[in-house]
Length: 154
Image (cartoon, rainbow, N blue to C red; front, side, top):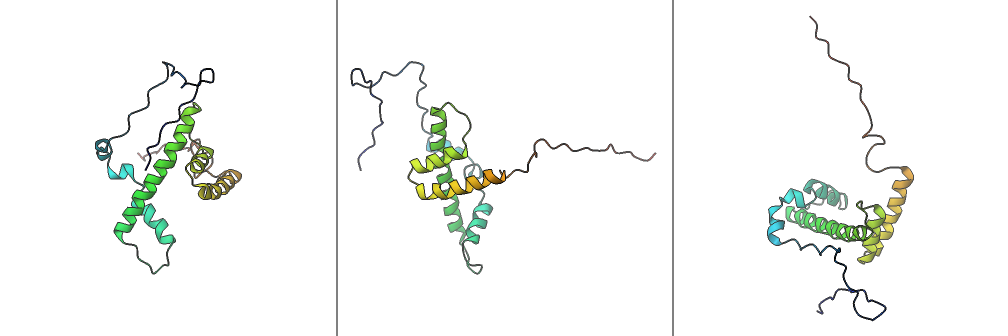
C-alpha cells in the first residue's frame, strides 16, 4: 500500500512549496500506546449499558447478545466517534473556532466517506433544530428554584 504524502500548498510565484511562517504552531505529537493505556476504560469508551440497550433494540426480543459482542461494538463505536470528532476538530481549528457543531460533524462524515450516514443525520439535525430540542430541557441551566427555609419547631 502506498504511503500517503501530506498536501503542501504551493507558492504561485515560484511553483515551490510555500514557506512556513514562524508563528505556525508545530503539529502536536501523536498519542502513544502508553498514554492510551493510562486512560481508564470508562474514560475511553461509551458506557456498555448504553451500547447494549441500542444493540438490543436492533434485534428480536428473544435474541441474546454475547458480552464480547457488546464489548467489540463498544470499542468500535467509541473509535468511530473519536475518528469523526477528530476530523471535525481539525476543521474548527483551521477556521479558528473552539466549538464543534452539528454541521462540522456532518462535514467530517462527508469528508471521510460516510456520505450515506451524513444524509440521514442532516435530516435528524434539521428536526432537532426545528423542535428546538438539544437533549437538555429549555432553560435548564437558568432555572431557579425557590427553597423555603426550614423552620424547626421550638
